[in-house]
Length: 294
Image 1 (cartoon, one colour):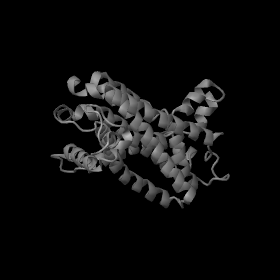
Image 2: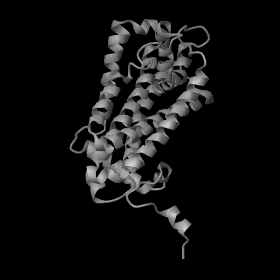
Image 3: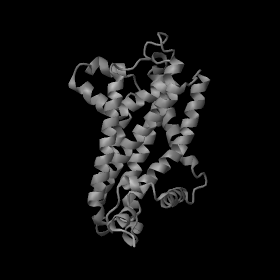
């Protein structure tokens, strides 16, 4: 007969999701949910997944024309097209995860009410779908950077993986937290929409971090700006994709990182992991009420 401890390792209390780490042992269910979400999202669409690329493409063109051409940022920042797109990719990826994970439990209300399965699977499946949509944007970014002379080394590749992991962890933690709140109060969706409206401007995607430092440097507001995890992550992507094309070493005076950049990245990692732990704990805390609230 199986011991109690072995049974507890295999099963969990009914109505309460296991810890997030256990979710990835249910890869078959996760795969089913990812395919379901992709099918539902593009059902009846002629262009299918091409629509997921149209929005960031139009966003990029608008930003580039408005800021790069009309406001002459392409003259202030060398290879502005690479600088801009490396930041836009981060923001689009974060926005899709945060937005869709927040709504994931409500969107899957029929499944939540009828059958029991670990509910973290829904936010995690939204993360996986965002990764699917990220890949073509990364391909375009890499091709564009290569045209401008990008030749990555192991350091750049390692930094790129680090930046990807940090933005994924931070966005998933936020999404778990807000998806639980959204079951109780649908106002959470509106708060998320407001946050996503300003996230592009809250980090150096369209402008130089030096412009912010010139005004806020030495004040508490500069610390708040840098404590936003998206800011160091965008700077990481600039370091990976844009720095090698901008002539680091004196050719481009704007190709620099803030002082104590390693410290900011460390703080970003700490905040991201704490957000994931808090989001997972709060999600499991409210999990037992999801079915009755929906």
